[in-house]
Image (cartoon, rainbow, N blue to C red; front, side):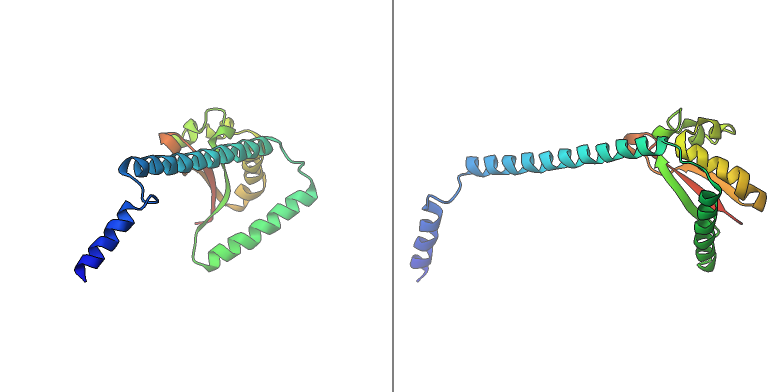
Length: 162
């Protein structure tokens, strides 16, 4: 019986559908190339999406009394919910550091003039805080929150009330 099993194994190994070591290595290389290609495609799509986001956020929005009321109402709901959870701050905006004239360097170094580096909607958000939220004693903190490739990535604005 063991002879039959042994010869059955030999016939499977000798079958032409069995890959040689060279064929298996080639197959593995092809798989790795396909995976790498998919990763590059995904990275390209992510970069394209990031560029669209930067382009969109560079365009300022019209600040009307209705827009101010809409933003204020949205923030009131979000801050109340955060306070009910026992939190003392809320992430209110996240954006690529490319929207800073210095790519986020002043924010990273907590330089007092960091707001001057803001452009587009982040600049508008800062002005909104200055005009509408700071008088109500809310604080705004900006910080770099990710470091792709060791460089400043996204900036986050945190609104706090502690």
